Length: 399
Image (tube, rainbow, N blue to C red; front, side, top):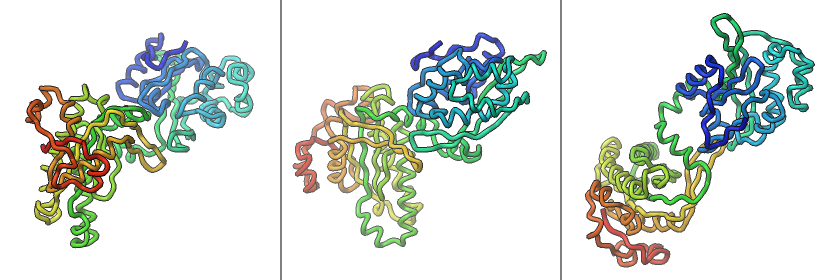
């Protein structure tokens, strides 16, 4: 039975295994469930997400033997998990003692059940009827090779009859490391990051901000003090962006880039409102940043440029060291030009952003959208040479 990517995995027919599956889902575990004969009867939502390496769920093959040809071919098509012949051999080596002990016909029968490429592993197995097994495995993922910790736990009923086995999967990092990563980040933000993981065209609001007179301030302060200031600004910026539902982009020096994709909000209007809210919140937070850095509010002033990108190409760049959201498109460069003109701590927003707001969202942030007037960048007294060259006709207003 094949469960498609857009379908939920049905609970196992066995009531005990169905209860285990429900508990796994409630706890958010990544796991497989097999019956007493090692036929796949369930794959948790989180396991499907982990296997896909993207916001979508992978399809599931139910009913066949965990190490049969159909299941192996399924795994070879996934981005994460056992997706290579080596990984499947490693998988069977780790849990094969249990599989062999549960196979009525012993080694000869198991050889007929597994994919032919795994028969050599079957010949080396020793039956193990214990209650639990654990092993480490390597796999190929988007960011390169990764290690996982795996645990197989027997499921028996009150009479002691074996009903199946749960196969738990987690990154090899210790729970203290995973907890630190989770506790320091907003889970909803991580979900939004996954939602835009796959590159594609995504309309979004864009926020650019940069510290004014940063070179003079860097020369005036000690290196340690300036680093501390930059760190406080980055933290304040990320908090304001994430708090408004946005996605911080790459941090370069004392500059800030953030995106507010329409697909992670209810509408384009909501995305535009969140962008404005984030910019205002960050501007308000700068006095606290200055105070904690023993500076006056006039020392820590940022320029803000807000724009709308209708044709942005956005996605995550994932490597072994980091994951970040980035976007390409003319509107990104235009947002940078708008920001460069917003001297004196002003927030300049493009007409294309403001007119994405519906009446309720405009009212919520105190804007009279229909009576707002605009000025082309080239006509601003603060227009830079690059703005006049690259984006002279973009109309902006001050918020």
